[in-house]
Length: 266
Image (cartoon, rainbow, N blue to C red; front, side):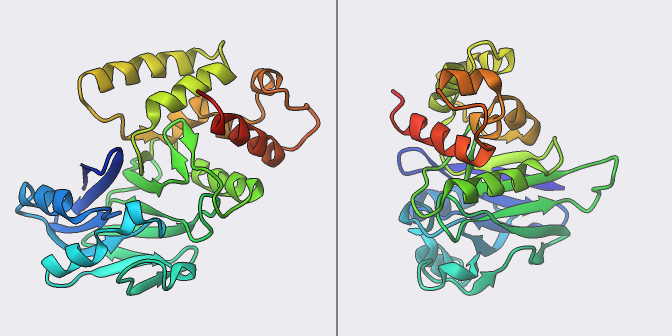
């Protein structure tokens, strides 16, 4: 079984502890700062962490890598091979489709450029996963947010479109753990894009309640994203009309226009 524990870091970041409940082996996803991560581990005494998974090189995701690894007596630090020299303490250099184990859990790396060119997602599947029973989670960093996507700092709309397509092909009940608590603002933009989308309205109402109660909105699911994420809905006639995107342009070009609109949305 997979257990995921979110840890709030900085102003709105999430680090995560993912653990195999059968063996107690664990990994930290995006050790953005050391103190909250190490404090969070104290509440998980049966989890033994030997891996740190970095989704991309930005300091708010890797700033605690070396201090956390040192406090743990050494830990392997994973990231994409193209981020060599940009991720502090990196020891493992991943390529698209690389697989490794965390206890009894299977982990697969997906290269998902767009926000950065070296962004990588970690897809984790439990040992009981079959065609009928799916236990899968994905850590998407700043490429896919709940109801959103990251800014295109290093990549292109075409890269982001392909990366989101790749994530959207995961099983619908895959749980999505992203890098920031941006869900409310993302859903407000989604309502702006598709005011008649009842799924968006319902999800916004739910997210407002969660945040008012002090609870995180993570995780979502791939199914949620397909219904409510504007960056996965660039084909929507209503979205295109609202954002003045011509019907004839392809979805990757439309995504660039949606991203530009989100960059200035208030």
